Each structure stands twice: as structure tokens, then as C-alpha cells.
Length: 102
Image (cartoon, rainbow, N blue to C red; front, side, top):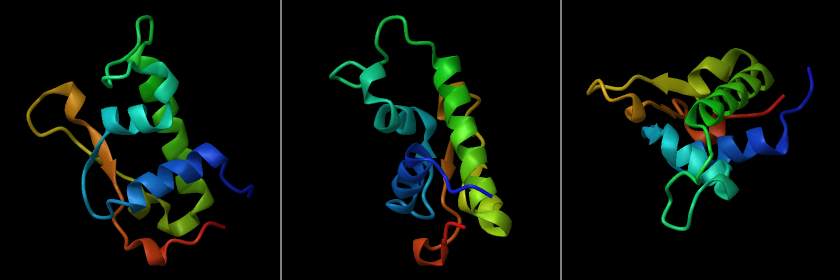
């Protein structure tokens, strides 16, 4: 199994900074792909949110694979609760000190 990419490790750090808390996917997009956003945090013209969402899902998958049996607990998807598609996100379900990348 190969180690996670620098971008996947960055995602892990972002989730670990708020362990146990819901992190909205739009916030993760902004932190992971700042060049795709304007200064005020909105998506830049021509940026497709579906593409960013797909990239984020691939990073989560990469993290889960790298973390083995703990993977599903580390980056657990949080469903939107209000029916607003922008409210989905992820959370770190384990204390950060229990996470070891294989």
C-alpha cells in the first residue's frame, strides 16, 4: 500500500484540527484548492463544484485506504440534515493521536 499524497495528508490535518466536528465540504474545498476561490471565499468563475466534490471524495478514499482498518472512522461522511446539498461534509471520528498513516 502506498503512502497518501501530500494533498490527502493536508485533508487529514484539516480534519484533525477539528476532530469530532463536522467540517463542511465547501470549507474543505476552500482550504484544499484556494486557487479555485476568490478572496472572499466564493468559487472562482468557471470552477465546477462537481469537480471539486469529486476531487474531495477521491482524497477521502485515498486516506481511507492509507489508514487501513481505521479509514472509515477517520474520514466519515456527514449527511446534510436540512436537505441543502451544500451542507454535506466530513469529520474525524477518532482522536487525532490514534491516527497512524500506514
